[in-house]
Length: 55
Image (cartoon, rainbow, N blue to C red; front, side):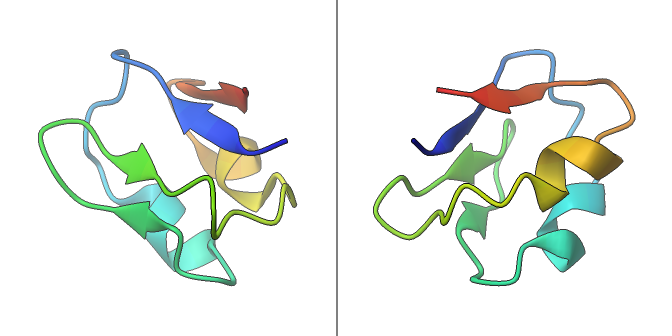
């Protein structure tokens, strides 16, 4: 199950460096590619606004 980034995302960039498989892409609200995400949860652990959750 991949993680998703909700509209609460502030595009701070904290999650990008934590993703070991580079599944997160930048934008107004960041997005996680479900085909690349390995469900490790590293991004969710560092999100300061808790905008990343399991899908």
